[in-house]
Amino acid sequence: MDNFKKYGKMSIDHLFKIGEEMMSGRSNGKLKLLYIMKILLEKTDEDHPITVYEIIRNLQFYGISAERKSIYSDIDLLKEFGLDIICIKGKANQYFIGSREFQLPELKLLVDAVQSSRFITYKKSAELIKKIEKLCSIYQAKTLHRQVIVSDRIKNMNENIYYNIDVIHQGIQENKKIKFQYFDYTMEKKIAFRREGEYYTVSPYALSWSDNNYYLIAYYQRYNGISNFRVDRMKNVQVIKEARESREEFKDFDIVDYSNKIFYMYSGKTEMVELEFDASLINVVLDRFGKDVFIYHKRKNCFCIRTEIIIGDTFLGWLFMFGDKVRVLSPESLKKKIKQRTKKVLKLYE
Image 1 (cartoon, rainbow, N blue to C red):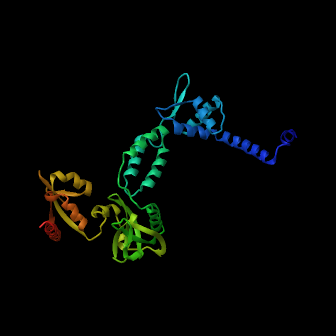
Image 2: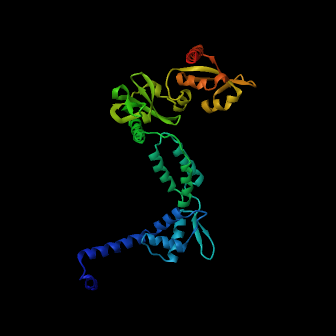
Image 3: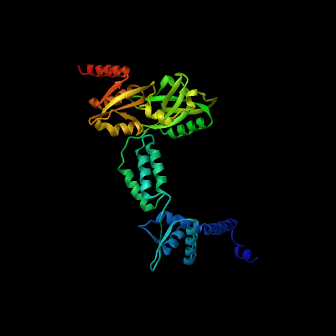
């Protein structure tokens, strides 16, 4: 009755407004603990501790009033919850977050990986880095941002790549085929579909990261074998109802072994190859073929390897990179290809 006398002369809209304010205040009071955690996570680190008075002042920004004693209790609760809150004792105690889920060097590593990745577009890079910055204090985030500014790397132009990856994973998980259009860029930087826009239908088996690009490894019936497709060159990717091909060769398919044999994701016939390298290229060989590669006939100035390779133009190009510091020992067919390629190049300069 007293409340009615107090508010009776007010309009209905005004009463609703007062009710909303009362409810808002009550809700904010219950959220106080979460806002204290938010303040500590966002605004503190080892170099930027915060006092209880500053916490109270920050809470006011969210419409929450609090007493000093309640803040101490809340900090104890957050510690009990598992938050690593460090207290610097003094006339006015100061608090900051100690260890976090990700330490600053780890976040810098993630930012650099995102920034240097060619398949992630500029727009998506900025979005991801903004999210990474939220994993540290606002002060530490500035150091991450400075790291981004100095980066100037070529990025992918296809914004649909993230959707493509998601659909491909769906096809693999559901054991279904996918279809898509495949394209190249023209000299005018415009999309030109292969086969006049005809859809490719394949059985997806794996995604591989190679040479700064994502590739789909799939069985393609047209070639009756494994084919590789650049994910950023795929458009209108769709999962279809038809089940994937249950090919015998995919039962024990080893993606790591396959990736080691192939050069720049150009498929072809696998052959045993023997190569002789100059001793100075040992690091290059181990980086490319791994530490398990079979090395024999080690001498002071050279060493030989024997390994399976998918021989194609890209492999020949890789060999030519090292000039007279690598020699093909076998097979004879590869020697012949090297000679033919060398003659073609020489003709350009005659």
